Length: 284
Image 1 (cartoon, rainbow, N blue to C red):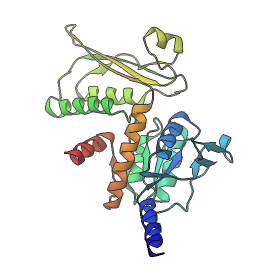
Image 2 (image 1 turned 90 degrees about the vertical axis):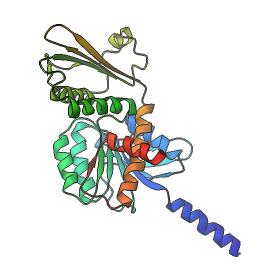
Image 3 (image 1 turned 180 degrees about the vertical axis):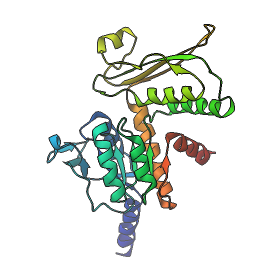
Image 4 (image 1 turned 180 degrees about the horizontal axis):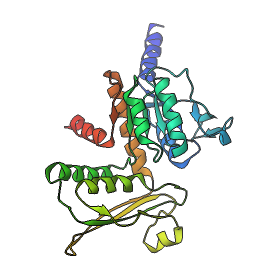
């Protein structure tokens, strides 16, 4: 009998160590992929309730096996301690959701692009929680951004007088201009380069196939060309096929934020650069 009670307590303790996660954005593709990964990972407790739009409220979604979640169009207010929200919604919903997260003290990982990012970050800074907010969760893209940041810090006028053109390609369902493309524009602007025209967004699947893109229903390509006053050119390219790199980055961000919250963090807006740096320090 005592052995049985000990076994039951051990099981409860194991269950209690899992990080509870609330998904926002089902049945969207990114939200669904992240939810399925969480449902299959013993380190997380995917909650049986998830946030959605008014269109899908009062429905449910099966995420493999017997894991089923009920969809609601509001942020639950009675979530357990330690819950992390993951937001893959729309630019229109992101700011509203951030109001709920900060008001209800739910730390969150936001991969949603667009919306008023400055307003969202200010909400976090004036709240009792912290968040990871990143327009791109793919590690290789973030590492390129980090390289540009180091260049900004060491050689701030590296591209003074240069012009840049930016093209980006994402799946047709993506409505807004790539947040990563805009981030590259800002970084290169700090290095002195100016954008010629507008960022070109490619959404036509046929054009994408002609460019050699294989996963037209889920990808992220960026082509950046820099031209100096004397005609010298430099090019940067990122090519992400499929969505798995974003899923892996999101899970890294959840682990990172969960640790930071246990340490008492609040009012801090973290980036994927913080997440990657922390991951390196943990493994060293």
